[in-house]
Length: 187
Image (cartoon, rainbow, N blue to C red):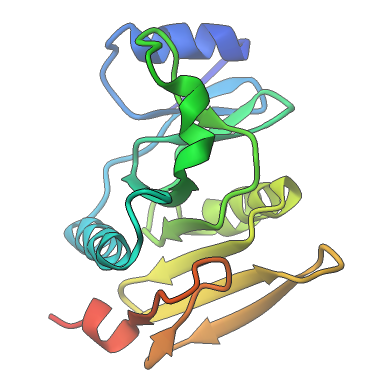
């Protein structure tokens, strides 16, 4: 559901922190509710978060699922399905109960999981925003096709796209982390 009236980021934060029901994003100043997701969407998101969390040093990184937000300066705030955030990035938000954690700095990994309700939108609208933010690696996981599309930032700022349909994937900005796609997609 999209609300046609434009709002500022502060109005968005006030609304979200008011306890209103739903998982809300701000798309170019317009309030949009993220739709509910399927069982496979939730399962793959949770399992990927679990696999990442088990390989990352908690003193250096946090893994968040449908919780922390990323911003682009033009009144756009997205709630990715999963993000990996350096602990140092979160320091500015600690001890402030009336402030949402909305990250502006590029992240090591941003993940969207395909669903029928948002799949096309994620590719057309969200992936380009994540790239414009300079996120190091962006994944779109498709639980039904059992695939992972990775966009990896190159030194010149461009992104290289790779599709994986099995085997292991190692995020470039997370040394020592390996995700076994056959395990991730196992029933």
